[in-house]
Amino acid sequence: MANHFPMPIDVFATFGRSDRLRPLHRPLGLAMPHLMGVLNRRAICGVIGLAGRRIAAPSCGSPATQLTATTIRQNLCDGRVMFETIAKAVTTWRMDGDFTFSDLTVEPEACGCAIEMPENSLPYVLTHPVASAQDLGALRIPDPYTDGRMPVFVECVSRLAERFSLLTIAGGSGPFTLAGELMGTENAAMATIENPGFLEEVLEFCLEVNIRYLQALCKAGAEVLLLGEPTAAILSPPSFRRFSGRYIRRLVERLKRPLILHTCGNASHLIEEMCATGALGISLDGPTDLEDAAGRMTPHTLLVGNLDPVEVFLGMDAEGVRERTRDMLAKMRGFRNYVAASGCDLSPLTPTENIEAFLDTVRSYR
Image 1 (cartoon, helix red, strand yellow):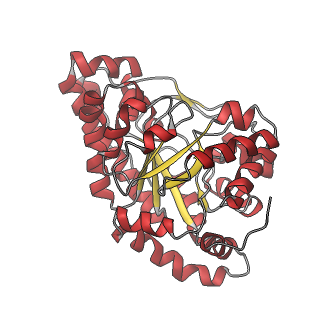
Image 2 (cartoon, rainbow, N blue to C red):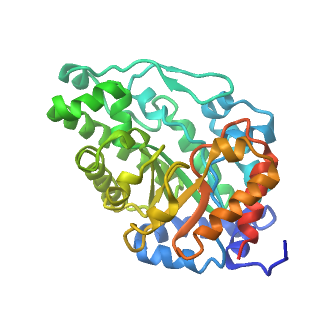
Image 3 (cartoon, one colour):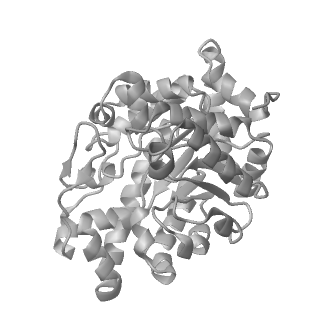
């Protein structure tokens, strides 16, 4: 592929990753959270438009463990180890930003759910402690500095913000997804019809958990928040509006940080409702048609996604990844507010050369 002159985002990212320029990172690192907190969505989209090329944002925490010979469990239980893994990925793959691992069991575990923690795959929830108002009343809002593994992620964000002056991205579970773990997904879904009042009580609790945890991540240095709300993909648009969207809107208003809202699977029926939350951007999984979503987006909203993490990143060779990435970028050429990314978290078995092929293709595309 033809060589290109460096774009503004290339200069910013090279500076932000540089080890030799670390003494200059601190002033920018202190100013960036404040700047991202006061800019509105239109201004942020305008800045991204000045980047000069597409920004690449694959969700590649788990496969980065191949670079440090660590396990997923080690990373999810130790903020220093997670930082070292992400730092290695950022510098090796010349990433446009830095980020924490994605783990939607952090909040449920801190709230009292038992989890299973495999050595080399993501953890999952085993128990659902909330079946009644009495159960809910027995819970307390966890302290993100002392409870469960929340401090692990706070520490990782703090170390990343100190090391790099790139945008630091961190996040957690959305309110309906957390409610689904506390109650059980099937019970939460049934409650939207049979017991909506109780579900709303659970969601009020979940919202406060979300806010307190995400506020701690922001104070540690996270400039952009990624909110995973995969369970909400099962909802109809009216149910999403009532049991997810309105709580996310309150979260956006409270946190004063750019927020990207992610759902898994096919979320074509929820595009307008996701945009209505006030999130800076919506992140879509592989089954959702990006071109269709782009035509239904509200102004000044980012669209993030959605190269398939299994079929493409895991199942193809590097040349196949390049070809599919170029196809995706070509389809989105006319949409200004687009960030190229994987549709969802990448498998820890994803070949590192496939991640490199994706990143190189995005960086080179004009």
